[in-house]
Image 1: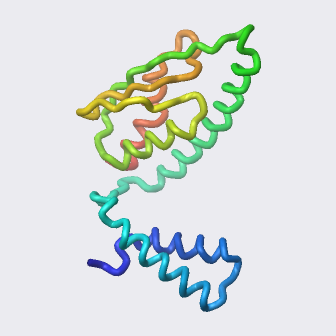
Image 2: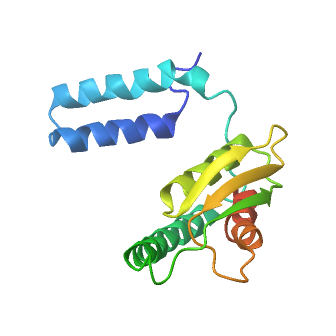
Image 3: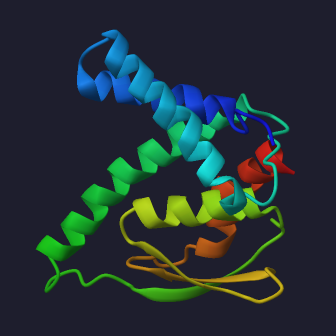
Length: 161
């Protein structure tokens, strides 16, 4: 058993601890170091597989895409809620065929779905080949599944697979 099974997590926890405490006195740093060492050790079994990123530089592109989509979706959902009677949203259940198989990539995809307004990850098939998704508004003529796969799945496959 390694003392630091997730060194980046430990470093991040220590930095977060010091920032939240607003002090770098020895007691704060020592307690933060203890937390930074113990949390990854205690949660080690929750991370059964090691995550490997094939192209970590693409993560910044993914973060940018998600950021833009969150802002855009907030405005779109607000507009449809505000003008619901004159322009009702076109809600839709969408089945998205998946090529992703890596648990970390699927977890990232579910996190994206959770933070982008207007989308809800509803069900993943047992063989992980299809995703049932509820979308608040799909513009007429748009193939949401193809758009979603191109926007996120392709990039996640580049990063993780």
